[in-house]
Image 1 (cartoon, protein in one colour):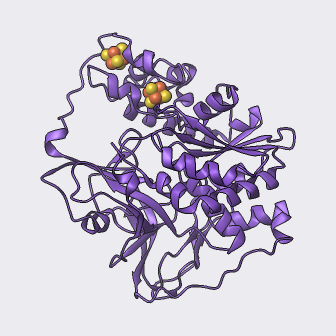
Image 2 (cartoon, rainbow, N blue to C red):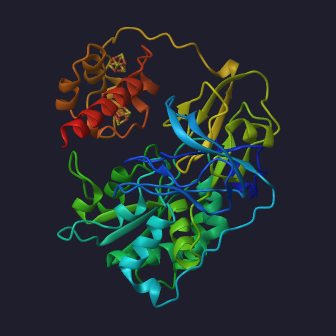
Image 3 (tube, rainbow, N blue to C red):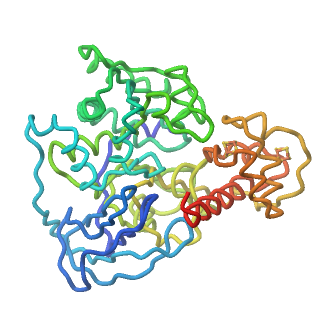
Length: 427
Ligand code: SF4
Ligand code: SF4
């Protein structure tokens, strides 16, 4: 579903009339605004920050005037405090500068620079990168994987990034390996991106400690635990994180952002994503300013083809269906996928018929059928005992379910409740 889009170069999206920057774009405590209404801001200026370790600051993606600081709808359906900026069109940039070669070798300075640049995982999870680059002392990282699998249908932004920014990806990988003292670097690419594999292979052939790993086309191979298993033959334990098997995974876009933060001091205020799907007039790979409303990007691609049925933020398997197209693109948005009315079916969930298909496909080997039933009757503790927190939200269980059970929605609800309860309990 992405062969043709993979051939289209990245284009710069135009500026919208209004930019909406949510002050909470990742796990961890939300940022507090650092600007006031009517204040003029510049591109790359820090406009929100938090004291929390698992947090990253946010920056303005345009020059212009702050016109409001108020709760606005986010893709998850929640209202999130956001800074609203009216762009002036000049794109005047705040001053930022990168490290010298000797400074770039100082791991602590690099971690601070990555945090200050607001870098989070661009593959979707939006986990702050400086936290990932600070593993516990007793869990050293030996293997770093750059994730270029992009296994979700329709989207092709990572594919284009590999073709157009391969040298920067390699530089980012070198920086990450140096910060962690890692021995080996891998760049994982699925074989439906053969041009990207050849291109990257040519560039890393002279790097002794790096190699490109071509992988068969398989969903959800791009999930970090699955990728570690397939490349390193190690299983991240249930409830664990990759550093427990001495590994770390960063997405292609994140690796580019890390290189730019260190070499140029550039904050994360724009990203590459795909606007695609059979319901959009012209699918494109776009470099988009963070905070651009989805409806602006739909217009940028010529509008809808026919009557829209579903607009999804992210990939079609793991993304969120939107009910309001004014929501902004955030750092973790990898795509906007549009399906026409005739390709969407009215949801008609029925009782589980115990066919076992969801269990068969689940890549983390949990029991979505039972977990879904526990959650439906409010037995969240039973769902937790059944390892619901190991779910990687790949969406496969719901995709194969003949009874159209809303398994991923139930699971997301339970995970959010468990996380909220853990925060309240301080564990
Ligand atoms: S979304 Fe479903 S199939 Fe995927 S990991 Fe979670 S429970 Fe398993
Ligand atoms: S796929 Fe659906 S119907 Fe089949 S066991 Fe799983 S939840 Fe039940």
